[in-house]
Amino acid sequence: MTRYVFKMPDLGEGTVEAEIVAWHVKVGEHVEEDQVMAEVMTEKAAVEVPAPVTGRVVSIAGGPGDMIRVGAELIVFETESSETEPLAVPAPLAAAPIAPAAVHVNEMVRKAGRVMASPASRRRAKEAGLDLAQVGGSGPGGRITRGDLEAALSGAAAPAVQAATATKRVATPGLARRTGTEEVKVIGVRRVIANRMTDAKRNIPHFAYVEEVDVTELESLRQHLNGRLPKGSAPLTYLPFLIAALARVLEDYPQCNAWFDTERNVVVRHRPLHAGVATQTPDGLKVPVVRHAEALTLRELAEEIKRVSEVARSGKATKEDLSGSTITVTSLGKLGGIVSTPIINAPEMAIIGVNKAIDRPVVMNGAITVRRIMNLSSSFDHRFVDGYDAAAMVQALKDMLEHPATIFMAG
Image (cartoon, rainbow, N blue to C red):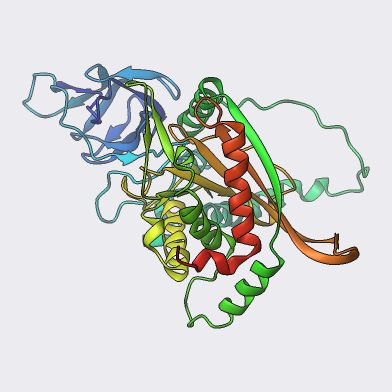
């Protein structure tokens, strides 16, 4: 028997350390070569690390939440190999990117046939003693979704739970005190989200501006166009119209379509519009990018928004899909509320928040009438975008959305 030392691999892009998100092996356990043994994360990437050899685990370094430097000992195996020298730092592993604004992509290093599931699902299944290989995945490529796991767990646990509680099912009070607390360690994706949101809020003096928009005419146009779409086409939401209008408006307000390069102390204004679309996923907030929105038709915008949102939610987004946005649009859809205060997606200068559209009584031409009203809640980097310019930009956007034909007029 010989000892085989595996060191924290170089994950590329200047990474000097990585966080342990989860261990899938333990000391004393026999591990097969290429078996997933750990999940690690840097500020830019999340990867599963496969075992380099077959052998018994002698020791592991750190636990979930601990940072391990590249080149430091990660795990030691006892093998039957004749190899006696410790491993050098391995070549960079394939890594899944994490886009700006706390984005996690669950693209893992895997071979065909390996179970596809998120780190959270793996941890929960392990704690419950459930073999994920026996769970059917309904997600893209056979990926095990949260619903698949819940169904498997409830199916496996139901008989035992029923048997254990059969004698306890007696009349109980309708109200009962709850006691206890739960501690959730901030690691992995949530740590990245927390750090980036904190940095953005600490370093960027946010200026918020809220304006209500009468989208009655826009809603009428939207419904009309949706009724004429070919079968299978992406439906037109408010976002394609908003991004199309932004592409026009930002030509006059380039300071809102820009980055601040902190290292060079330079504001970089972008002529193209690469629109970030904040997307909530099971793995956390992601911001996939619709590139060159200024060159896309309304239908093309709708299709591209649908595509990038779906790949973000399924964990199939590439680094190209999740980087390079010049301004971000965020919407909570039906949960949009009245007003929100979105945090800027650094290094950008602005973010446009879309709130819920509702029918409200308003006064028009001296009479009360019902109109569909939607608020835009936006934030700007007040270091480089003056309040007047921010307000003027939102007013120009409001004017286009209230008169949607102007979005498509040349000149």
